[in-house]
Length: 470
Ligand code: HEM
Image 1 (cartoon, protein in one colour):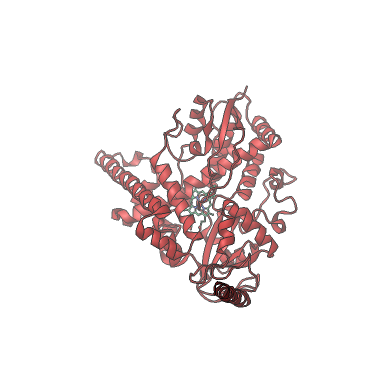
Image 2: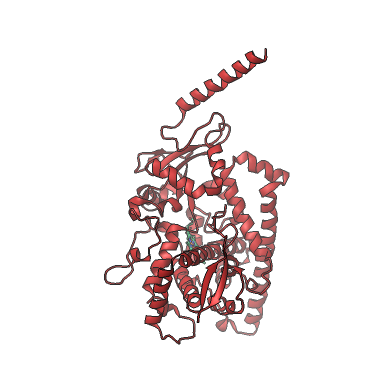
C-alpha cells in the first residue's frame, strides 16, 4: 500500500514537473522546480546573489525570466542589457514607471522623489534642484579620524553621524534603523508578497525589525523638522533670515507644502537614503579596492602631490578636486564594480517590446542589475572585472565620457541622480584628505561581502587598521 501511494505521489510530481517545464518561459534563468519555481535557486545562492545574477545573465545573453512559486506573483524579467536599459530609462521613459507595487515595498520612503511617479515625481524633482543639494560634513570626517590609530569599521565612519568617530564607536540607533529598513526592503524582493505581508501582520522576523526601524526613523526626522521650525522662527523674529544657512530641510520648508509634516518627512527621508548610504557604500568599496591595489594608491598620491604642494595641510576645495583626474577614474571604477544601488525595478504602462526582443506588459516586473552591467564584457571589455582607473583617462589626460545608460551607477535619463556632481566632490574631498595622511590595512582574515540590502554596503563593514603616513 505504501509503495502504491509513493508511486502515485511520484507520478503526480513528475507530471506536474513536466507540465510546468513545458508551459514555463522560453528563456528560464535558472533551474525551475515544480510548484516553487526558481525561488529555491535564488535562496540557495542568496549569500552571493549579485554575482549569481551576473553569471546567469551572462549565460542568457543579458536578459531572462525569473518565475517564482506558482501561487505568487513573483514573475520578473531581469536584464543587464544596456539597450534595454536605455530604452526604459531614456527613449521610452514615459512608459516605464516605478508603479504602486514598488511604493508598497518601499513604504518607508512615502511619496518622496525616489518612489513617486508622474506629476508627484515631477513636482518633487522641481523643488529639489541639484544646486540646492549640498552639505558639508567632509572636513570633519577627514580631520577627526586622526585621533584613532586602532582598528575600526570604516563603513560606520563614512556614514552620516557625528558620533561615529568617537573612540568607543557606539552603536548609533539611527544608523541601525536605516540599515534595517534598507535590509527589510531588500528582503521583500526575495520572498512572495504573501510571506512578508503575513510576517508584517504577525510582527515577526524581518518585518518586526522594519516596524521598529520606521518608528525610530520617524521620531528622528520629525524631531529634526520640529527643531528646524523653532530655529527658523527664532531667526525670523530676530530678522536674521538673510544669514541663515540654507540646508536642504530649510529649502524644503520654503515650499508651499512646508506646513505638511508628511511631505517634509518623506522628502527628508528620501534625501537621507539617497545621499547618505550611497556615499558610504562607494567610499567603503573604494578604500577596500585601493588597499588591494598599492600601485593605484601610489598613483593617487602622486597626482595629489603633483597638483598641490607636498606640505599643503588644508582640505582640498571644489575647484581643486576637479584637477584630480586619476582619483576620479579610481572612484568611477569603484562605482562601476560596486554600484551602491545594485538593482532597480520598473513596470511598463503599455505593452511594449524591449530591444532584446522580450515582450512586456503592465504585469511584468522588470529588474535591471546595475551590478551585472558594471561587469558586462560587451560594455567594458574582457578586463571588465579588473580595477583599472586608467580606463577612465584619455590620452590627453582627460576623463573619458561614458553614457549614463552604460555607466549606470547614477541611473540615466530624466531620473538621473540629482546628487551626482555633489557626490563626486564629496567623495574626492574625503578620499584625498584621508589618503594623504593615512594608510589603510584591512584586518587579517576580514573579507568583505556585500550586504543583503537595497544599498550595496559591506555585510560586516570594512575592518581596517589605519596608520599615519610618515
Ligand atoms: C555615490 C553616490 C550616489 C550614487 C551612486 C547615487 C545613485 C543614484 C541612483 C542609482 C538613483 C536612481 C534610484 C532609483 O531610481 O531607484 C539616484 C537617485 C537620486 N539621487 Fe543619487 N546617488 C548618489 C548620491 C546622491 C546624493 C549625495 C544625493 C543628494 C543628497 C542624491 C540624490 C538623489 C535623488 C534626489 C534621487 C532621485 C532622483 C529621481 O528619481 O528623480 N544622490 N541616485
